[in-house]
Image (tube, rainbow, N blue to C red; front, side, top):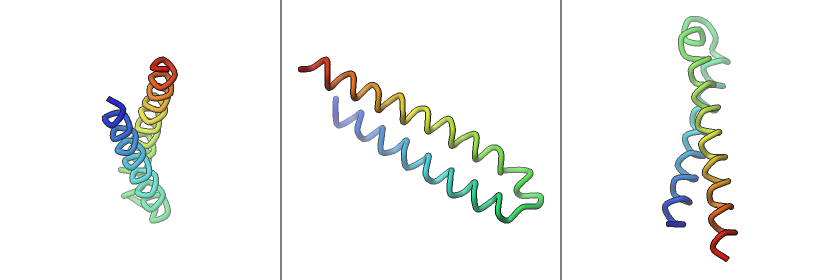
Length: 67
């Protein structure tokens, strides 16, 4: 069970990092592409960041309830 949670945390953190970098690149380019994708990428970053934090809280809770 712990391996599954850790794997999901790493995946969520990776997607968060990817969407952050992609969002920053799109915002620096500006123009039409920023209008189309900039806000969507940053919103996606917030969602996956929330998922990663929730998974970290779940892992913390599981580690303390097991002992």
